[in-house]
Length: 186
Image (cartoon, rainbow, N blue to C red):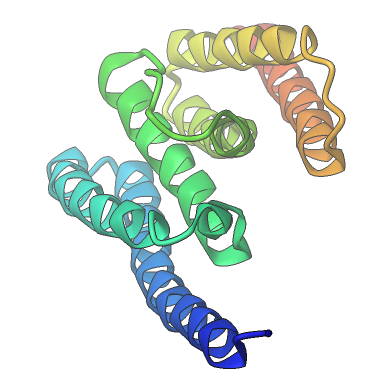
């Protein structure tokens, strides 16, 4: 006999945890945006504090996601984690000049990594305005490296493929910026 009460409880429990996941995802998403904004304004001390805060929020999000294996594929979770990746990678690159690995699902990491060149491009334009050509070139070289590595994958997911194409366009903009700076003799 079908146990409808059990099925109903299972769905109710999932929905209840999903609501918690959505709320916590919003918290991670907001902190991601604040980190990126702080880094763009060269407020690395503030960004560092926000990094500590987002790490705690992400741990809580991960705890909620362990309720059910399907949770990590919920849209709100996926977006929050890829924004988290983008924010942390951006902060680390500006602070150290390096891009670290993060312990998240490979797909989510790649989605966040593919968003990083857009922020790096914004930073390059800011730095170009200050005449810091070497830093602009370093950013261009890093995006070129990321794009070259991404080309080695055989992406079957349309979302990742679209984002890899966006990396290519960000690289072109950076190449044009570097060329323009060199032609102007900066």
